[in-house]
Amino acid sequence: MRFYGLWLFTHGGQKALAVMSSEGNEAVRRRIRDDEGAPSEAEPGRITIYFERIAGTLDRLISLHGIKVLDKPAWDARKAALGDAAKD
Image 1 (cartoon, rainbow, N blue to C red):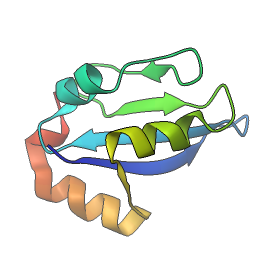
Image 2 (cartoon, helix red, strand yellow; image 1 turned 180 degrees about the horizontal axis):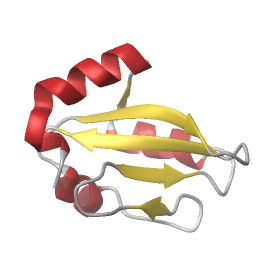
Image 3 (tube, rainbow, N blue to C red; image 1 turned 30 degrees about the horizontal axis):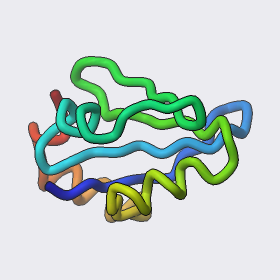
């Protein structure tokens, strides 16, 4: 299974990371659990987003889970290629 990420920022400037997988969103939520430093927002049919509450937590998640962080054009292409696998 491969994880792909995209850096985001909330309206308040909080750092966030959207994560999708070749195996779908449920696989992301099963493998990458919330912790106090990076809680997630996950809704059915939507890509999971992790929010950085403690500095460095998202970098740790990237390293721990081998998340390949993409730029926006590469993210859009990968999401289109995965199709329904990028959804629940």
